[in-house]
Amino acid sequence: MQSQPWIVMVIICTSLLQIFLPAVESDPSIGDIVLSLPGQPVFSFQQYAGNVTVNSNSSQPQRTLFYYFVEAEAQPASKPVVLWLNGGPGCSSLGLGAFFTHGPFKPSGSGTLIKNDYKAHMLYVESPAGVGFSYYENKTFYANVTDDMAAQDNFIFLRQWLLKFPQYKNSSIYLAGESYVGKILFLR
Image (tube, rainbow, N blue to C red; front, side):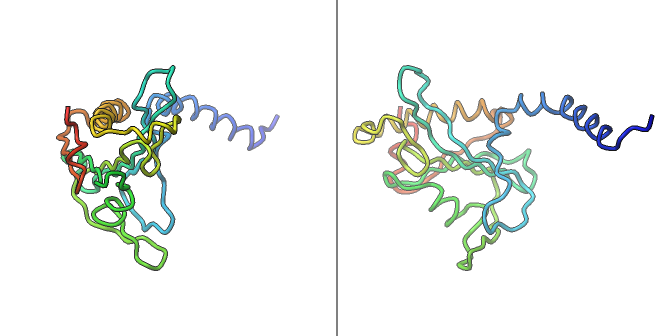
């Protein structure tokens, strides 16, 4: 009996899934991979975006901080991680830091992005909850945010983020930002 080509392909695909699926499931960052952005040029680094929960009490509404992480393009194993927070308070780290000042891409003015040189792994965080894509399901929280709360959330964020990206737990980590951000960078 002659086998059908599609049966062979099903067997090959099933075998590959059995080999690779456990590796994908064991990597918590895999769901946060950003394959491309609108108008993005060709690039040779990984980029990730997602939310990290900063309150683990399941009886409370979820509070998360949004991040955009770009791995260094040249010699990534030897590069530090720079955690960048914009000031404000309440200023987006994505809009100003990542896509205007020093991120991997800059807008060209014609609807496309142009490549920008950068030298480290860049971790942009929208902080405190309520800024950019960061949120808290309890909307009354926003009226009561303090610098101490933002600092505590940033500290928890970094611990949780390192669980998601354990390959960076032994890297040098630099805290950077501009303007008011110095008041909410891990003051405790």
